[in-house]
Length: 92
Image (cartoon, rainbow, N blue to C red):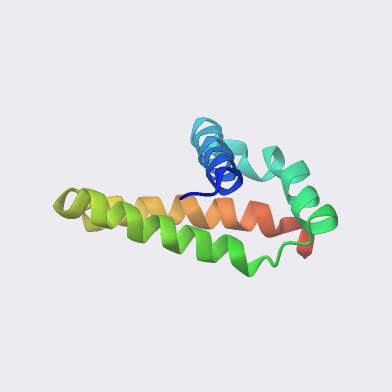
């Protein structure tokens, strides 16, 4: 929380998820360059994408509590699985 670079990257990640929500029918194509960047330039372990999705799910669960119904959780996890797949696409 005290690292401004981490905070800035968190903002970028959340903006990326916001963008994905707006273009849910074409997440894989929209994220192609982002996948290439993470794979080729940053060399991010693709397992980290799933870990981030899991962390976000836990965070949302603790914030929304009873409002985070099983149906909402299922929809959220389905959305995140598409995002993770799109980000991991360049690795395959």
